Length: 101
Image (cartoon, rainbow, N blue to C red; front, side, top):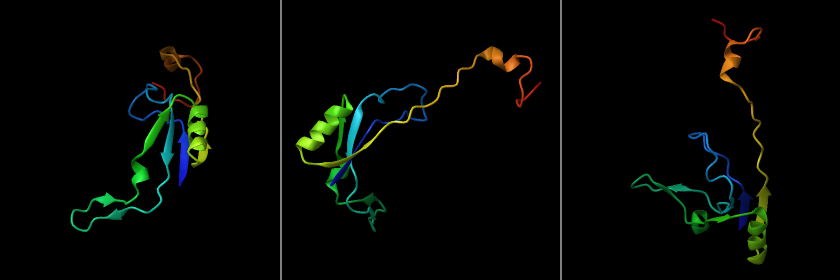
C-alpha cells in the first residue's frame, strides 16, 4: 500500500489559489478499474482509493504515514512563474512579435 503526499495545484477553472495550501495524503490504486457490464459504471474493489487525508503541513503528513507504517512518496510542488503585465504594455512603443493594430 503506497501513499502519495503532495500539495494540490490550483484548478484551471479559477484564478485563485483556494484549497492549495494544505497537503494531501492519497493512496495509489492497488487494482485496475473495471467496467460493470450492466450499467457501464467503472469501479474497483480497492477501498483505499476513497481515502483522502488533508494536513496543514508536509511534516504532519509524513509523521502520520510513518506512525501508521504506510509507505509513502512525497511530491514537491512546482512553483509557477509569474508574468507581471499591465494593460499599458499592450500599447507600448517597440513591442516585438505581438499583434499590432
